[in-house]
Length: 356
Image (cartoon, rainbow, N blue to C red; front, top):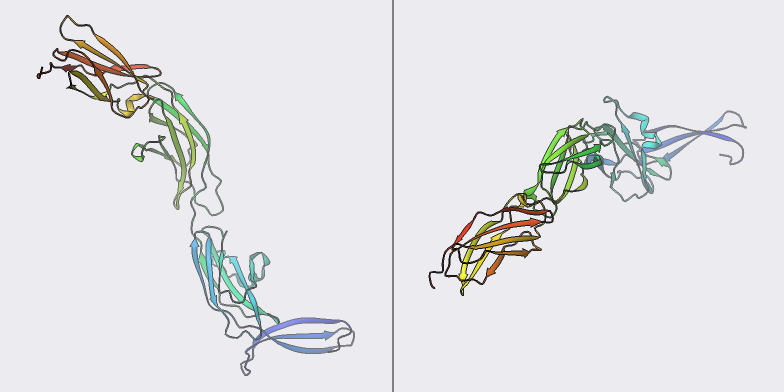
Protein backbone atom coordinates (compact mmCIF):
# COMPACT_ATOMS: atom_id res chain seq x y z
CA UNK A 1 0.00 0.00 0.00
CA UNK A 2 1.30 3.46 -0.96
CA UNK A 3 1.90 5.32 2.30
CA UNK A 4 1.09 8.77 0.82
CA UNK A 5 -2.46 9.98 0.13
CA UNK A 6 -5.82 9.60 1.89
CA UNK A 7 -7.33 6.25 2.84
CA UNK A 8 -10.42 4.92 4.59
CA UNK A 9 -10.13 1.76 6.64
CA UNK A 10 -12.96 -0.47 7.84
CA UNK A 11 -12.86 -3.55 10.05
CA UNK A 12 -15.08 -5.96 8.19
CA UNK A 13 -15.09 -9.03 10.42
CA UNK A 14 -13.24 -11.36 12.71
CA UNK A 15 -13.25 -14.95 11.55
CA UNK A 16 -11.68 -18.33 12.04
CA UNK A 17 -8.95 -19.44 9.68
CA UNK A 18 -9.20 -23.09 10.61
CA UNK A 19 -6.71 -24.16 7.95
CA UNK A 20 -3.82 -22.16 9.41
CA UNK A 21 -1.82 -22.48 12.63
CA UNK A 22 -3.32 -19.29 14.08
CA UNK A 23 -7.10 -19.63 13.92
CA UNK A 24 -8.14 -16.02 14.73
CA UNK A 25 -7.66 -13.22 12.17
CA UNK A 26 -8.88 -9.64 11.94
CA UNK A 27 -9.74 -8.64 8.35
CA UNK A 28 -9.30 -4.97 7.39
CA UNK A 29 -10.04 -3.50 3.94
CA UNK A 30 -8.41 -0.18 3.02
CA UNK A 31 -9.69 2.06 0.19
CA UNK A 32 -7.45 4.67 -1.45
CA UNK A 33 -9.76 7.70 -1.67
CA UNK A 34 -7.74 9.70 -4.22
CA UNK A 35 -6.71 6.86 -6.50
CA UNK A 36 -10.02 5.35 -7.46
CA UNK A 37 -11.70 2.23 -6.19
CA UNK A 38 -8.50 0.50 -5.21
CA UNK A 39 -9.08 -1.82 -2.27
CA UNK A 40 -6.40 -3.66 -0.37
CA UNK A 41 -7.11 -6.31 2.27
CA UNK A 42 -5.00 -6.99 5.36
CA UNK A 43 -5.26 -9.72 7.99
CA UNK A 44 -4.08 -9.28 11.59
CA UNK A 45 -3.78 -12.04 14.15
CA UNK A 46 -5.79 -11.42 17.33
CA UNK A 47 -6.19 -13.49 20.53
CA UNK A 48 -8.69 -16.25 20.97
CA UNK A 49 -11.20 -15.93 23.82
CA UNK A 50 -10.04 -16.27 27.44
CA UNK A 51 -10.97 -19.64 28.93
CA UNK A 52 -13.05 -20.76 31.89
CA UNK A 53 -14.67 -17.41 32.70
CA UNK A 54 -16.22 -17.61 36.18
CA UNK A 55 -18.09 -14.95 38.18
CA UNK A 56 -18.82 -15.41 41.90
CA UNK A 57 -20.30 -13.16 44.58
CA UNK A 58 -17.88 -12.02 47.30
CA UNK A 59 -20.38 -9.67 48.97
CA UNK A 60 -23.92 -8.53 48.17
CA UNK A 61 -22.54 -5.89 45.76
CA UNK A 62 -19.12 -7.30 44.82
CA UNK A 63 -17.97 -10.11 42.52
CA UNK A 64 -14.75 -11.92 41.72
CA UNK A 65 -14.15 -12.56 38.01
CA UNK A 66 -11.67 -15.34 37.23
CA UNK A 67 -10.39 -16.74 33.93
CA UNK A 68 -7.55 -18.55 32.21
CA UNK A 69 -5.46 -17.05 29.37
CA UNK A 70 -6.51 -17.71 25.76
CA UNK A 71 -5.06 -20.71 24.02
CA UNK A 72 -3.89 -18.54 21.12
CA UNK A 73 -2.36 -15.20 22.06
CA UNK A 74 -1.29 -14.69 18.42
CA UNK A 75 1.53 -12.41 19.40
CA UNK A 76 2.30 -10.57 22.60
CA UNK A 77 -0.74 -10.53 24.87
CA UNK A 78 -1.20 -7.01 26.29
CA UNK A 79 -4.21 -7.41 28.59
CA UNK A 80 -7.95 -7.91 28.86
CA UNK A 81 -11.26 -6.09 28.68
CA UNK A 82 -14.09 -7.02 31.06
CA UNK A 83 -17.60 -5.91 30.10
CA UNK A 84 -20.52 -5.89 32.50
CA UNK A 85 -24.09 -4.79 31.88
CA UNK A 86 -27.27 -4.74 33.88
CA UNK A 87 -29.86 -7.13 32.56
CA UNK A 88 -33.49 -6.17 32.18
CA UNK A 89 -35.98 -8.99 32.34
CA UNK A 90 -33.36 -11.51 31.21
CA UNK A 91 -32.49 -9.54 28.05
CA UNK A 92 -29.06 -10.41 26.66
CA UNK A 93 -26.44 -7.67 27.09
CA UNK A 94 -25.09 -8.44 23.60
CA UNK A 95 -23.14 -5.66 21.95
CA UNK A 96 -23.76 -3.38 24.93
CA UNK A 97 -20.43 -4.71 26.19
CA UNK A 98 -18.76 -2.01 24.14
CA UNK A 99 -20.33 0.65 26.33
CA UNK A 100 -17.31 2.33 27.94
CA UNK A 101 -19.27 2.99 31.12
CA UNK A 102 -19.33 -0.75 31.76
CA UNK A 103 -15.85 -1.65 30.51
CA UNK A 104 -12.80 -2.39 32.65
CA UNK A 105 -9.36 -2.58 31.06
CA UNK A 106 -6.69 -4.78 32.63
CA UNK A 107 -3.21 -4.09 31.28
CA UNK A 108 -1.53 -6.96 33.10
CA UNK A 109 -1.56 -10.02 30.79
CA UNK A 110 -0.48 -12.27 33.68
CA UNK A 111 -3.55 -11.44 35.76
CA UNK A 112 -6.22 -14.13 35.96
CA UNK A 113 -8.79 -12.54 38.27
CA UNK A 114 -10.38 -9.17 39.02
CA UNK A 115 -12.58 -8.03 41.91
CA UNK A 116 -15.37 -5.63 41.03
CA UNK A 117 -17.40 -3.74 43.62
CA UNK A 118 -20.05 -1.02 43.85
CA UNK A 119 -22.59 -3.04 41.88
CA UNK A 120 -26.26 -2.46 42.55
CA UNK A 121 -28.00 -4.88 44.95
CA UNK A 122 -30.71 -7.31 43.85
CA UNK A 123 -29.68 -6.83 40.21
CA UNK A 124 -28.85 -9.28 37.42
CA UNK A 125 -25.60 -8.55 35.59
CA UNK A 126 -24.07 -10.07 32.45
CA UNK A 127 -20.29 -10.43 32.20
CA UNK A 128 -18.02 -11.28 29.29
CA UNK A 129 -14.45 -10.49 28.36
CA UNK A 130 -11.80 -10.68 25.68
CA UNK A 131 -8.04 -10.35 25.42
CA UNK A 132 -6.13 -7.88 23.25
CA UNK A 133 -2.72 -7.75 21.61
CA UNK A 134 -1.01 -5.21 19.38
CA UNK A 135 -3.33 -6.07 16.53
CA UNK A 136 -6.58 -5.45 18.39
CA UNK A 137 -9.31 -6.95 20.53
CA UNK A 138 -9.74 -10.70 20.50
CA UNK A 139 -12.72 -12.97 20.57
CA UNK A 140 -15.33 -12.71 23.32
CA UNK A 141 -16.03 -15.33 25.91
CA UNK A 142 -19.53 -16.59 26.43
CA UNK A 143 -21.73 -14.42 28.66
CA UNK A 144 -21.90 -15.24 32.37
CA UNK A 145 -24.79 -13.86 34.41
CA UNK A 146 -25.15 -13.41 38.15
CA UNK A 147 -27.69 -11.80 40.49
CA UNK A 148 -26.23 -9.61 43.22
CA UNK A 149 -27.40 -10.00 46.80
CA UNK A 150 -29.64 -7.81 48.86
CA UNK A 151 -28.17 -5.35 51.34
CA UNK A 152 -29.09 -4.22 54.82
CA UNK A 153 -30.13 -0.57 55.27
CA UNK A 154 -27.86 2.29 56.17
CA UNK A 155 -28.13 3.45 59.81
CA UNK A 156 -30.89 5.90 60.72
CA UNK A 157 -29.97 9.32 62.10
CA UNK A 158 -30.96 10.16 65.68
CA UNK A 159 -32.50 13.63 65.70
CA UNK A 160 -33.29 14.02 69.41
CA UNK A 161 -33.27 12.11 72.69
CA UNK A 162 -34.86 13.60 75.79
CA UNK A 163 -36.80 12.80 78.95
CA UNK A 164 -40.58 13.07 78.76
CA UNK A 165 -40.94 12.34 82.47
CA UNK A 166 -38.06 13.18 84.83
CA UNK A 167 -39.37 11.56 88.02
CA UNK A 168 -39.98 7.89 88.61
CA UNK A 169 -40.99 6.05 86.52
CA UNK A 170 -38.78 7.73 83.94
CA UNK A 171 -39.83 7.93 80.28
CA UNK A 172 -37.58 9.08 77.40
CA UNK A 173 -38.45 9.86 73.78
CA UNK A 174 -36.18 9.21 70.80
CA UNK A 175 -36.78 10.71 67.33
CA UNK A 176 -34.89 9.71 64.19
CA UNK A 177 -34.60 10.28 60.47
CA UNK A 178 -34.99 7.14 58.31
CA UNK A 179 -32.01 6.19 56.12
CA UNK A 180 -32.21 6.88 52.40
CA UNK A 181 -33.28 3.80 50.46
CA UNK A 182 -30.73 2.89 47.79
CA UNK A 183 -31.67 1.49 44.35
CA UNK A 184 -33.11 -2.03 44.59
CA UNK A 185 -32.86 -1.98 48.40
CA UNK A 186 -35.73 -3.61 50.22
CA UNK A 187 -38.05 -1.62 52.52
CA UNK A 188 -37.35 -1.23 56.22
CA UNK A 189 -39.40 -3.71 58.23
CA UNK A 190 -38.64 -2.42 61.71
CA UNK A 191 -36.37 -0.34 63.92
CA UNK A 192 -34.59 -1.82 66.93
CA UNK A 193 -33.62 0.19 70.00
CA UNK A 194 -31.20 -1.16 72.63
CA UNK A 195 -30.30 0.62 75.86
CA UNK A 196 -28.39 -0.15 79.04
CA UNK A 197 -26.58 1.71 81.82
CA UNK A 198 -23.03 2.59 80.83
CA UNK A 199 -20.43 0.32 82.39
CA UNK A 200 -22.82 -2.51 83.27
CA UNK A 201 -22.81 -5.92 81.62
CA UNK A 202 -25.00 -6.88 78.68
CA UNK A 203 -27.31 -8.74 81.05
CA UNK A 204 -28.81 -5.29 81.81
CA UNK A 205 -29.54 -4.63 78.13
CA UNK A 206 -33.14 -3.84 77.19
CA UNK A 207 -34.55 -3.86 73.66
CA UNK A 208 -37.59 -2.43 71.94
CA UNK A 209 -38.72 -2.85 68.31
CA UNK A 210 -41.14 -0.63 66.38
CA UNK A 211 -42.60 -0.85 62.89
CA UNK A 212 -40.60 0.28 59.87
CA UNK A 213 -42.76 3.35 59.24
CA UNK A 214 -42.13 4.81 62.71
CA UNK A 215 -39.84 7.80 63.26
CA UNK A 216 -40.06 8.02 67.06
CA UNK A 217 -40.82 5.98 70.15
CA UNK A 218 -40.71 6.13 73.95
CA UNK A 219 -38.47 3.99 76.13
CA UNK A 220 -39.20 3.11 79.73
CA UNK A 221 -37.79 1.03 82.60
CA UNK A 222 -34.98 3.56 83.03
CA UNK A 223 -33.16 3.90 86.33
CA UNK A 224 -32.45 7.27 87.88
CA UNK A 225 -28.98 8.72 88.31
CA UNK A 226 -27.29 6.83 85.48
CA UNK A 227 -25.81 7.43 82.03
CA UNK A 228 -27.37 5.23 79.37
CA UNK A 229 -25.95 4.08 76.05
CA UNK A 230 -28.63 4.07 73.35
CA UNK A 231 -28.34 2.20 70.03
CA UNK A 232 -30.79 2.53 67.12
CA UNK A 233 -30.73 0.34 63.99
CA UNK A 234 -32.92 -0.29 60.94
CA UNK A 235 -33.73 -3.79 59.71
CA UNK A 236 -34.98 -5.20 56.42
CA UNK A 237 -35.22 -8.74 55.04
CA UNK A 238 -31.48 -8.78 54.34
CA UNK A 239 -30.37 -7.86 57.84
CA UNK A 240 -29.64 -5.17 60.39
CA UNK A 241 -27.98 -1.83 59.65
CA UNK A 242 -25.15 -0.39 61.62
CA UNK A 243 -26.27 1.44 64.74
CA UNK A 244 -26.72 5.12 65.41
CA UNK A 245 -25.58 5.83 68.99
CA UNK A 246 -26.47 8.39 71.64
CA UNK A 247 -26.22 8.78 75.42
CA UNK A 248 -28.83 9.84 77.97
CA UNK A 249 -28.27 11.10 81.52
CA UNK A 250 -31.11 10.39 83.91
CA UNK A 251 -31.72 12.62 86.96
CA UNK A 252 -30.59 11.59 90.43
CA UNK A 253 -33.20 10.72 93.04
CA UNK A 254 -33.14 9.49 96.61
CA UNK A 255 -32.89 5.69 96.91
CA UNK A 256 -36.06 3.63 96.65
CA UNK A 257 -34.50 0.64 98.35
CA UNK A 258 -32.78 -0.06 101.64
CA UNK A 259 -29.30 -1.57 102.16
CA UNK A 260 -29.21 -5.34 101.77
CA UNK A 261 -27.73 -8.24 103.70
CA UNK A 262 -27.29 -6.42 107.04
CA UNK A 263 -25.48 -8.63 109.56
CA UNK A 264 -23.28 -8.28 112.62
CA UNK A 265 -20.47 -9.93 114.52
CA UNK A 266 -18.91 -9.25 117.91
CA UNK A 267 -15.13 -9.13 117.81
CA UNK A 268 -12.88 -8.27 120.75
CA UNK A 269 -15.75 -6.71 122.61
CA UNK A 270 -16.80 -4.51 119.66
CA UNK A 271 -19.90 -4.71 117.48
CA UNK A 272 -19.11 -4.80 113.73
CA UNK A 273 -22.06 -4.41 111.36
CA UNK A 274 -21.74 -4.99 107.58
CA UNK A 275 -24.14 -4.58 104.65
CA UNK A 276 -24.44 -4.28 100.89
CA UNK A 277 -25.77 -1.24 99.01
CA UNK A 278 -29.41 -1.17 97.85
CA UNK A 279 -30.24 -3.11 94.66
CA UNK A 280 -28.99 -1.41 91.48
CA UNK A 281 -32.48 -0.57 90.27
CA UNK A 282 -33.31 1.06 93.62
CA UNK A 283 -30.23 3.26 94.13
CA UNK A 284 -31.34 6.13 91.84
CA UNK A 285 -27.80 7.45 91.61
CA UNK A 286 -24.41 7.01 93.24
CA UNK A 287 -24.59 6.19 96.94
CA UNK A 288 -22.66 8.94 98.72
CA UNK A 289 -23.38 8.15 102.39
CA UNK A 290 -25.16 5.92 104.90
CA UNK A 291 -26.88 6.76 108.18
CA UNK A 292 -26.50 4.03 110.82
CA UNK A 293 -28.49 4.01 114.07
CA UNK A 294 -27.56 1.73 117.00
CA UNK A 295 -30.06 1.79 119.88
CA UNK A 296 -29.66 0.03 123.29
CA UNK A 297 -32.66 -2.11 124.13
CA UNK A 298 -32.58 -1.05 127.80
CA UNK A 299 -33.49 2.44 128.95
CA UNK A 300 -30.03 3.30 130.25
CA UNK A 301 -27.88 3.85 127.16
CA UNK A 302 -28.25 6.52 124.50
CA UNK A 303 -28.95 5.98 120.83
CA UNK A 304 -25.86 6.22 118.61
CA UNK A 305 -26.33 7.80 115.18
CA UNK A 306 -23.42 7.73 112.75
CA UNK A 307 -22.93 8.96 109.18
CA UNK A 308 -20.65 6.83 106.98
CA UNK A 309 -19.38 8.52 103.81
CA UNK A 310 -19.10 6.31 100.73
CA UNK A 311 -17.38 6.63 97.37
CA UNK A 312 -18.31 3.14 96.18
CA UNK A 313 -21.89 2.25 95.30
CA UNK A 314 -21.23 -1.43 94.74
CA UNK A 315 -18.89 -2.80 97.45
CA UNK A 316 -19.72 -4.16 100.92
CA UNK A 317 -19.69 -1.58 103.73
CA UNK A 318 -19.10 -1.86 107.48
CA UNK A 319 -19.12 0.15 110.68
CA UNK A 320 -17.66 -0.63 114.12
CA UNK A 321 -19.18 0.41 117.46
CA UNK A 322 -17.07 0.41 120.62
CA UNK A 323 -19.91 -0.20 123.07
CA UNK A 324 -20.75 -2.64 125.81
CA UNK A 325 -21.19 -5.86 123.86
CA UNK A 326 -22.84 -7.51 126.88
CA UNK A 327 -26.00 -5.54 126.17
CA UNK A 328 -28.64 -6.03 123.48
CA UNK A 329 -29.13 -3.46 120.70
CA UNK A 330 -31.17 -2.76 117.62
CA UNK A 331 -29.62 -1.54 114.39
CA UNK A 332 -30.93 -0.02 111.17
CA UNK A 333 -29.29 1.78 108.25
CA UNK A 334 -30.33 3.93 105.26
CA UNK A 335 -28.48 4.85 102.06
CA UNK A 336 -28.26 8.34 100.57
CA UNK A 337 -27.57 9.92 97.18
CA UNK A 338 -26.98 13.63 96.66
CA UNK A 339 -30.78 13.98 96.70
CA UNK A 340 -31.30 12.52 100.15
CA UNK A 341 -31.83 9.35 102.17
CA UNK A 342 -33.92 6.39 101.24
CA UNK A 343 -35.76 3.94 103.51
CA UNK A 344 -34.14 2.24 106.48
CA UNK A 345 -33.36 -1.43 106.50
CA UNK A 346 -35.50 -3.73 108.67
CA UNK A 347 -34.49 -3.54 112.33
CA UNK A 348 -31.68 -5.94 113.20
CA UNK A 349 -31.53 -7.25 116.78
CA UNK A 350 -28.01 -7.57 118.19
CA UNK A 351 -27.97 -10.04 121.06
CA UNK A 352 -25.58 -9.76 124.03
CA UNK A 353 -22.14 -11.32 123.67
CA UNK A 354 -22.60 -14.81 125.12
CA UNK A 355 -18.85 -15.16 125.77
CA UNK A 356 -18.87 -12.19 128.13
